[in-house]
Amino acid sequence: MAWTVRLALLQLKQRAEQELGFGISFASSRTFALSSSLVDNGLADGEVLQVLARRARLFSSRFCSSFVLVQSDGTVKGWGNWQACADMDFAQRRLTEVQQVAVGKNAMAALRVDGTVVSWGDCESPESCGLQETDLQDVQDIAASIHAFAALRRDGQVRTWGWPNYGGDSSEVRDQLVDVVQVVASFYAFAALKRDGSVVTWGEAHCGGDSQRVQAELRAVRLLRSTARAFAALRCDGTVVTWGHPVAGGDSSHVLLQGVVDVSSTRAAFAALHGDSQATAWGHATAGGDASAVQDQLHEVQEIVGSDGAFAAVCRDGRLVLWGDERYGAQSGLTHLSDLQQLVASNYAFAALTAEGTVLTWGHGAGGGDSSAVQEQLKEVQQVVGSSDSFAALRKDETVVVW
Image (cartoon, rainbow, N blue to C red; front, top):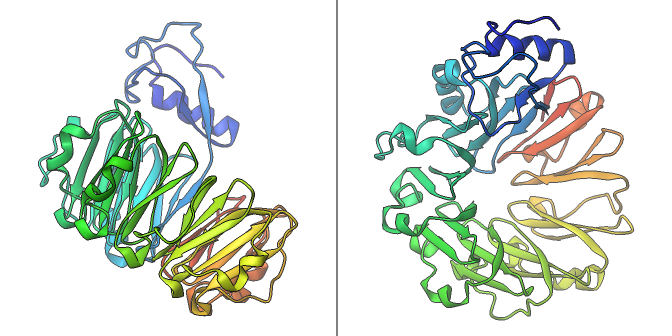
């Protein structure tokens, strides 16, 4: 590919993407100005630029019915929630080089390759929450509650914006939000895991924003999970600490949680996968918190996924074990899943992506559980995501099928 050092870096990138047939981003710790020339970016003749291949990805959340497609060229398309998607049109000129989108109920926030953030929709803006432009630079991840966002920066600091009672105001704990490695949201609060294994929380107190009751136990934590109103912290020794609304999984005192390797959730219950491949559930009984009816089947479990009110466990031999509320996908004509690539849920249903690129669904028909109308289109699928009441499948040719 012919080029000169006076060529704009953006032009070089676009030419490379055209020849390669997929999007790329620069794999460098240096910050480049795409509109400037190669020489103005400090690149010398003969210098090698490493790049990362970038594939199209779908994003959504269980807060709303919106979907966002980040295309391989880093541009964005959205549909679903009229308010968030309409506001996306106003933000479109800044939505380039996007790598991730966090989706709230009526608002979204996009993380760009250069570590900057673009947010839009019905939510308090970063500026109105007192953030400066420099606060949202060098960001590596974004988490969303219903009406607020938390941006994790590469220096381990966290910046928040949005409605205060949904976690948009972290001023009381801002000095503690350093050396953070993970941020997780419930519907109304956030929890941040720090490098030393401690946890900081903020937002609606009774929905997990207040962790004082268990703060002494929040040590050597390696993973955080959430329901709508509670959090679970998986510690390095395999034990689990919970807090938040007791009925939504915040009280695990009645179950034995040892040797745990992962935790999944519905809206109001948790399920722990143990190292011996067995599973334990707690929380609201009708939301999957009571697995007693299928407990003898929960062995050799590989993966557990939750909808709003039901769990689906896939076992090593392909067995599918369901429990919870039938209205949320706890009943299916399927008993086995073979060659499973991905299992996801909407609020009311489940979708399984097979190695062949086909999709199987079950659950409430109005919540994505019935894919018969689009089944012929569900071929060569690479990714499936669920929203509050529907699914979207990304195909190999970057077209999207929604049901």
